[in-house]
Image 1: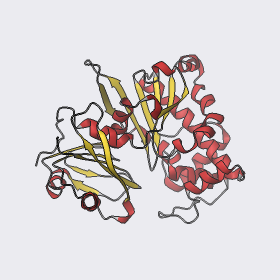
Image 2 (image 1 turned 30 degrees about the vertical axis):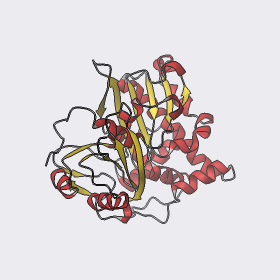
Image 3 (image 1 turned 60 degrees about the vertical axis):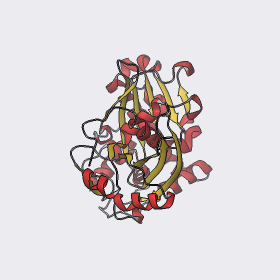
Image 4 (image 1 turned 90 degrees about the horizontal axis):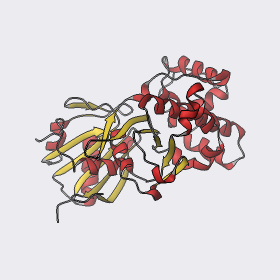
Length: 332
């Protein structure tokens, strides 16, 4: 039996690690651990901690990281972690290390999902993963990737930084949110709105909290998990208003992504949305998804689903090791 490989999905809040069994059409994941990135000084330290826990020394690894993947030196977008590919491979004793964008990995994982691992919001169950597939997802940041079939009918991913395009508010309330965010951050990207911190800042803007520039963490902001729990309890109108606005904006962005990519499916991944699928269904998400003027009828034919598989990024990272080594693979 082939030795297990190390896989990781490294975000701004959590670093997820696991082992995968290679040589299978869909690798089996096991020994999964979720580590809080705030507890470690570097990716190297977090990875060594995980490997010490599982007492395994793999020689191959694929790590998905929340940032653009270019060159040998990598710096995460929403966490002060940086590393050099070759040095990381040497530190971990790896013969092969692949680095890919976190949402590129999530998109690869989406291509391998079974019907029980997503929930269809709209569309045709028999063709739920019709390609091209726009994969989007709010988490610590906002990920966007494009998934499409290659000439051999296998899945190919185009990694993007679409979460950093400009936020286009609709209506007076969203313009107020935009102006609040602009006063706090300057330029307002989609990620500023559709992320965990974005939910906190939507809530603050709707409640007229002064938009002073502050360091993270900000005690003036309510934690996104608290807002979500309060909204779903049905007893906090301000939390419900913030989550409802989050869903409406997500609908607009999902429709934009479908038009940008020529998608036949939009898959929503990330760590936030699977927690409130019933709320999303009853929100203005679908109305805003279709609110594209002359292209509303076109979007009626686009499937929309929410990924419920707990670790699509780890699954995609494992799948990446089955493909021929790309140019950026590090062989120390």
